[in-house]
Figure 1 (cartoon, one colour):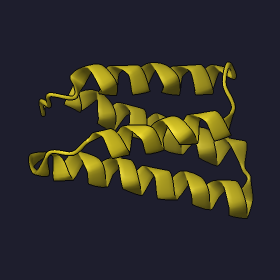
Figure 2 (cartoon, one colour):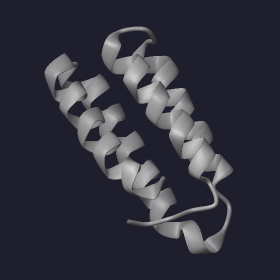
Figure 3 (cartoon, rainbow, N blue to C red):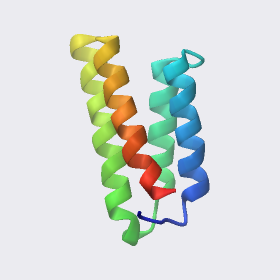
Length: 88
């Protein structure tokens, strides 16, 4: 399990993921929250976490503007949530 000083923000993002998966928020709002989290991670030691966020943001963007497949989007978001939880 990885630990980060950003555990609170990561927990907030996991809640946002759950909200997106339940349909409570739009994919656009979710994408903004991922981008905001990435910007908030500033420590050089957290390079791996920033890369994880950036890669996920790119995957979401690709799905949104190519396939627009809800099942693919949910699978990507769930995979990301599972990986992100190891940082809490």
